[in-house]
Amino acid sequence: MSKDYLEAAIEIARDAGKILREEFDRPAQISYKGDVDLVTQADKRSEQTIVGRLTKYFPDHSIAAEEGSGHESGSEFRWHVDPLDGTTNFAHGYPCFSVSIALAQRGALLAGVVYNPFYDELFAAARGAGATLNGKRIFVSKVDVLATSLMCTGFPVHKRLANPNIHYYWDFTLRSHGVRRDGSAALDLASVAAGRFDGFWEFGLKAWDTAAGVLLIEEAGGKVSDFLGRPYELGGPVILATNGLIHEEARGVAFEISQRDPSAPLRR
Ligand code: IPD
Ligand code: CA
Ligand code: CA
Image (cartoon, rainbow, N blue to C red; front, top):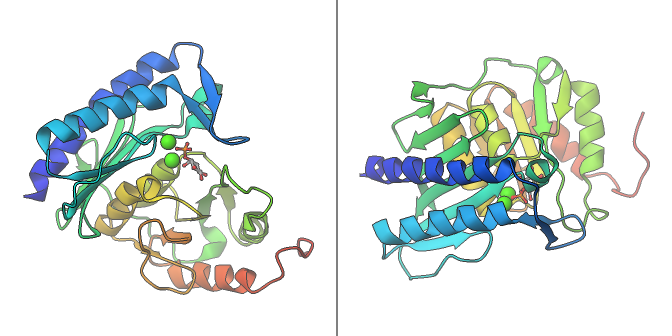
């Protein structure tokens, strides 16, 4: 059953991706939702296509979409839609951005797609059926210590000064092969699923940022939790997603940092 949902999500993500490709070649018309929270014509056109098509195919389902054009139907099925994840990259011409579409039934993820139209990389997963990249099975990496891991994180566009992540960034950088900040949480999670990154964490992500990526990681053999090791809940305040092998070590480091005074200077 969830296979049909996945097929629909793949078709729609590819069409939304075509719009993003077209818009990427034009000068971006940027407006601001917050001091560094950008939105472009591309976000809106992509969302219009996705929400319109989902509504046509699944008229009874609810849709939560970032730019606000979704609707609540009271259904147990809810689509989580980020029409353009990585808007800042997009607006600056850095080709690291994606479409993220996922379906959950009473909070349980059934299907998810993350698509980078610039590189034509489509990551897809259906519950119980594994995760794929352009149709080929993908799996998380086999790196089993943090010291030889490549990590990834992101920084929020809201309340930047209140965010403690610079402390985590500092510590994880010193304890690993490095920490990337690539600017599309959905692609960051997909990259953990594909074994390109060994782990990822971030604060304050919304369900539309993480839903598809979380299912990709679970279906690729990885693990997703909060810093206490409790299962990650969509839209929860913090996410830690890894290949599973480094999860406990990374979680311990994150938990230790969370106990420090966030206004203290960075540690040497
Ligand atoms: C953002 C990206 C970024 C993350 C931010 C998100 P947007 O989404 O996923 O990587 O660090 O927290 O808000 O605004 O480009 O859809
Ligand atoms: Ca996003
Ligand atoms: Ca977005």
